[in-house]
Length: 283
Image (tube, rainbow, N blue to C red; front, side, top):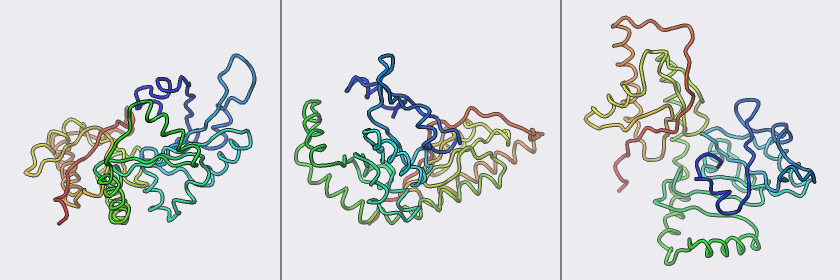
């Protein structure tokens, strides 16, 4: 929300943002929020009006108990809670928690039908009737309204009904990626809690560029690059097998050439890239 939205918060509203980095290196807690929140009439500071969370973030799940604590604290100070829930469907599928329960601590939520659910396009803003009425006014002011959107609504409805149940398979594929990479000796930067895995192949003497080049040479090419692997409902099992075979082959080649794995390796951290090969459309 801070780094990848083209400065939209400042552009559209004139508001500033205060990023919060979780002390546990996994998810934001109430203690993290309290360290950064501005509840003061000191004129030197911009007072906090909204606490905004993203779930999932890079595929990781914020425990609902922490969200409830943050929400109760924010509401006790008259603040609003917003959820970037583009991939909240993954949380519901993985934890077995209802969407109603996941969204209750928030005053507004945005959800996406095209990411995890695979609709061709479409997001939805959720809130009170008063809030949505105001949001429609802003949407009109920004020139963002659309007409004749029944086909998009139908696509979203289809995705909710038919594609949501496929997320369980998606998560299993992501876990198979993580397991395979670990067995081969790659370093896992962020585990497969839902649909993403971040990994580092340098302990094997292999670079992301080599992996990408080898993937492009397959008879059924894989588009690869960087540390982030994202699995979705159109990802085939064979794509995962082919990817792991690439890592295995490159690791064996490096070992045969004399590569010795160092005791410790450094990484630049997760990069926003992907693994992509689509399955044939369903008939």
